[in-house]
Length: 550
Ligand SMILES: Nc1ncnc2c1ncn2[C@@H]1O[C@H](COP(=O)(O)OP(=O)(O)OP(=O)(O)O)[C@@H](O)[C@H]1O
Ligand SMILES: [Mg+2]
Image 1: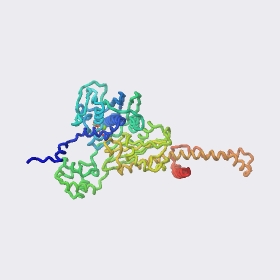
Image 2: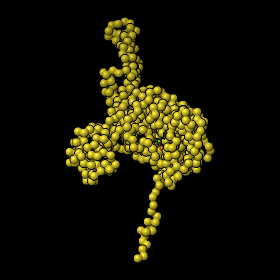
Image 3: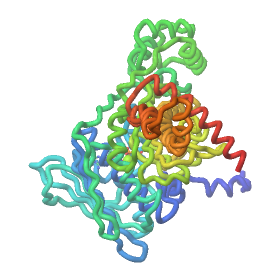
Image 4: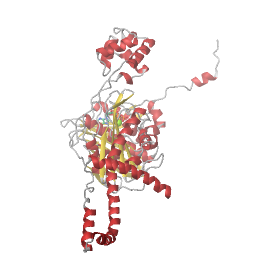
């Protein structure tokens, strides 16, 4: 029988697989390559983030150099070099010229990268805009030569296309260097490379970055500490964070022979007692074979997990900056009068542990009449784009900054001479897109950010309050001083003292007796702080009145 050609057949002829690289080449904005300016910044960010991750994993204090050369016609040559552990020869082509290839995606521990797409996306963008291959040099041991590659990505097949493969001498014990030529645009401002590197230096005080910008100006962000950040430990998933589909997949691929051992071995915080309880709550036998479990049984297991009380996941998988170092970083890079920072205790979203930290730098050379500068970080990486879409911004907007000495209009960021920093560290940061620019609005995360902001807010209030109080006191003192001669004159008669100067000096002494007791800003005095809290509130009302009158 002759086959009838339908519209469906016509459509079928056009239906085929879509390669990952082809997809992302077309949707490169998803990876942070939406315009020339951002593309240059993203390229550097991906390379620097990788260098930092690699150094930290290898216990090496990072020394990174970033070089940008303006080649004219909106083309730039970017070189990023690190003193990291280097990359094994066989891995180099795949790491740099295959999208979705990496070591961090399957690992539950805190790293800057997580998706396995960052650096290959930069290589692909360079290739798309200039047609030039990326040049990679890497060395893993002082006694071994370095390997040099020139690579293209075969976008149809998403695999490396090796243009050159060589062995070279490199005067370095170990490390990796990547050279990319791409279309870009170099501009200053809040979303610039300069800003990204500066903000990176703030929360990574153990890093030295040498940066040469396209104007051939060199900047050195020197390390402020030789202490390595605490190395995060890899953890297994927590049962509360595993969705039904994932549970199904885990059961299918596990090597464990019983449900009981599957639960204790594949998850964190499940001992044999907890595993038994889960089985009981799920009405499943602990010796059930994982591979034989039907969809209905998996669903029962998921229910059983929900009904069982399981302690929160361990938190040594995350390495927060620490309030002391965060404050040190702020002092190093921002010229202000007052600095404070706070680290919240660990919390959990979807089974993933996370820690929020906040910092503030107040006063100094910062503009008093504009909105505060909000710095957002995820796993020590500055987030410069999509501020409006980020959970950090939402939490900052919902905080009542008037309580902490900054003025604020409804639904806006506070106004004042301050920089506010929020940093979140997690084994998996829930970004709103692959370009890792904004944090998704998980209620647990928003709540923690607010609590961290309140904590530094209170410290800020204590300083701003003291400052305002001293100012108010000095104004009052000046005012009273004007009346001292008149009061002395009147008192002289009432008290029957002839010497008016003596009365004056008694009054001045009285007025001056408390001076200096309030001058010591920053000295903690609980009684005094209570006063200040009251003062802050009074002041807030007077602010409102002021506004009402004007
Ligand atoms: N400079 C480097 N030194 C050592 N290893 C590196 C370096 N750069 C990349 N790698 C390795 O290459 C892998 C792929 O890097 P890539 O940036 O593509 O992905 P990622 O960092 O894992 O995740 P993300 O896409 O979120 O950046 C990394 O996981 C790491 O193992
Ligand atoms: Mg990366």
